[in-house]
Length: 428
Image (cartoon, helix red, strand yellow):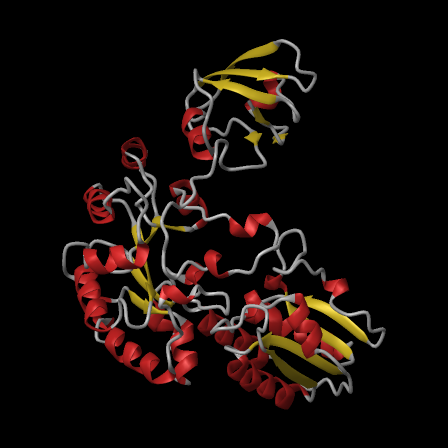
C-alpha cells in the first residue's frame, strides 16, 4: 500500500471520493512502484482504483472517467514507493566512504537509482541496472538521464569504479540508451593519475566524435578528497599546475560545445571563470558547473541599479575557501557602489579537510569557530542547510552561536537574489 499525502480538490480522484490519508492498493490492475509508474498508469481515460481508508477496514473500489493526460489528482510524500536502488560498486573516490561516522544515516545512502536520475538529476553508473529496468527505461522513454562514466577505457573504468559482482556492462547499456535516442548527460569524476592525461583525451574523443558521440553533454569534476579518505584509495587532490593542464586539455574539445569543466578547476588555478556563452544552456548546472558564472552575472546585473545607502552597519558574509576570491571581488564592488561595510570570512573546512572548499559542505562547527569575535549581522549561505534546517553536522542556524551580539541570517545563493538581499541587510 502507498499512503496518499494529499488529493487535489478539483481533481477526478477527489470527485470520486478519494481523500488524503487513504492508501493506494491498486491502480489499473497494478500497484505503482514509483511516481513515474503512477503517472504512466494514471494517464488513461478510464481508471480503476482501489484504496484503503486510514481505519484499515475493507477496501474501496473506484471507477473514474477522465480525459487522457488529465491529472488524476493524487499526491505522495515519496517519489519511489519501493526501495531506492543503492550502489553496489566500490569506487575509489566515493565521497560517502570518505565521511566521518555518526552523522545522520541519510547521508550514508549511496543511491544509484535511474528513477532519481530522471526526476532529480542524480548521476547513476548503469552498472546496477537489471535487464527489466533497462527495458523499462527504453520502453517508457525515461529521459534525460545523468550517467557517471569516468573513462571509456574499460580497464581504467573498472579500476576506478570496482563494480560489484554481476554488474551490468556500462558501455553496452549506454550504447543501448543512445540507440534508443534517449537524452543522456555524462559526468566524469577526474582523479589525478588515474583517468586524466591520455585517458581523459581518449574518453572525450569517444564522447564527442566516437562511440558515444550522441550524449548531450559532458561535465568534468575533480574528485573530492577528505581527511577520512582511505589511504589505499590512491585518490589525491589536484595541484594548481595540474588544474592548468586539465583546463588546456579540455578546451581543445570546446568546438564540440558540450564539454564543460567544473568551476573548481578554474578557481584552483586562479583562472577566469568562462563567460556565459561558453556554458551554452548550462546543461550541467546541477553538477556545479557554471554556478560561479551565473552568480557573478546575476550579482552584477542587480548591482548596476544600486546607489549609495550610507549605512554604517557592519555585515559579515560567510563563504567557502574555494569561492572566496570571487566573493571578495564582488563584495568590493558592492561596498564601493553602495558605501556599505561588508566583509567576507572564508571558512576553512576542518570538518572534512582535504580539498573540500565549497560553501555547501561547510559545517556548523567550522562556522562557529570562524566567527569567534564577530558581531552584528552574519550572512550564511542557505544551501548549507537541508530541508529540515540542519547542516551536515546537525546544527541549526540558531545553534551556531550563542552570542547576543551576533544575528545569523540564512542568505540566498542565487546571485541576483543575494545582491538584493545584501542591500536590504546593509540598509536596515
